[in-house]
Length: 640
Image 1 (spheres, helix red, strand yellow):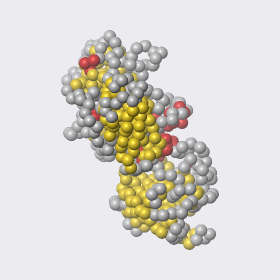
Image 2 (cartoon, one colour):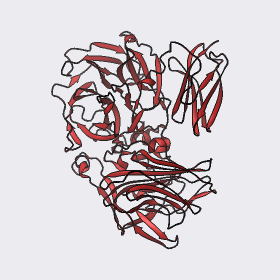
Image 3 (tube, helix red, strand yellow):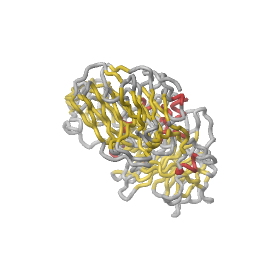
Image 4 (cartoon, rainbow, N blue to C red):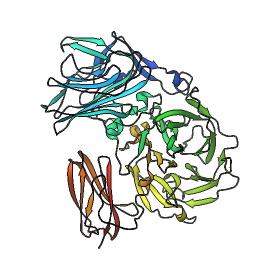
């Protein structure tokens, strides 16, 4: 195996069974690594199945199974400790104590991520003082679990310890500490193994009986969007967390979590896109709502594209994602005319999915859920449900009694249109041609409709640049058959945006193909947003003009803007609870950024910023402050 260097892009140690080229040098004893063929994955990953790669695991058999290794030297941090430890595992037997991942030998300094009476704990010994936190729930045998822990020493002489389980923060504690620098992350690392004795003569004892899928140590605190997002448990490596961030140790590529971008428009819910580790690229989005109107299941369509740009080597799929738990519940393989198509859009009508691509709409009835049946299901289209349409059928959405089908076209291609096809009482396309045809802007990826405040709005998504996407808002009444209607607002979304679908409560769901293997490895996209996510209607209507502009108002940032009206300069004040990067934007009523200022890091407490607005046109604007996951917003009037 290759020896990992401590300068390897933040990954200090990695053990990945079956991938020697991606692992640190390790010394296993009575540890057997091989493909783990889970019976639940039989249809997709066993020989003769759908052709997906099986997951590899290392089997530990208790006290005889030990594994240790890592870099050849300690890593010194100027202001530490800062590190993240992660394990992906399945216990076969419970015991009083399990050391899962550690670099401690006996009572010497270092950290341990382990289980105490099945409860996760994380401990770090510094200068003879032991700092420890305990989780709250047992880890059950026979179940896959992702456990992560982090430690960070802050400038306020505080040690922050955290434990995460399956993408949720389980416990976090801040402890006063005054530490000397630099801090050394010592090697070697021990996986499923307790080390006692001395560094020169350690005695190793196995503590784990079960499967170890992966173990990783990073020399930084991983991105919060990574640590606090539920993995989809889709049967692939890392339980569906994107595996293609596994660049070779010693390289200069950033790990996946460090490349996740944040955006101005707040996301209310998100989860990792399943099956990206199987080389699928997400496209279409559809939503089934529960009795309260919230998304109960989100459906995402995918086509297959390998890193070497090979297409049609696997059939296109639609994944049914439990929107409450964030897990992939079922995966459907398409078997109609669109079996290997791009499947750019899907729409849910009753108990069937309409799939759009290549000028064709196919209707696929969804079988009733059976918990005892396979999670991988071959779907067959209705014999009478396949229709050729006027559009390229790049995307499709349903609204009331109409299917709306649209074109994606670039500047060098003919004008794109949005076509409305009526549905009969059974949810089938009614005979005849489109009942409505509207020209739309170019490069539109998805369209959906929603009634809010008594008005029917139309939302259209497209990628604005190589870093940002936008959702354009129209009023349905403003659409014209003879010309493209002007949109009344543009909202910033993550790059790679695809199809749109509304839940009944007004949450807009979509996904980003920026988080896929092909685009991250081949296209060189700088952005990374590997999620299916929702945005609330309140954010989509945030730039609807207000009737009156009142005095300054306070927000969750304690934000104040004055004078209002303004002529030459604005004074903007707000309060930060913790260190955070801050972005301040001034946006007009059409959603266009007039001014934009970014501050890489501001400290907690009251902040005061001034912005020159002398050159702005007269009118009404919004001042938006984004910081630490909070947003302050206030309307102002500018006078010339």
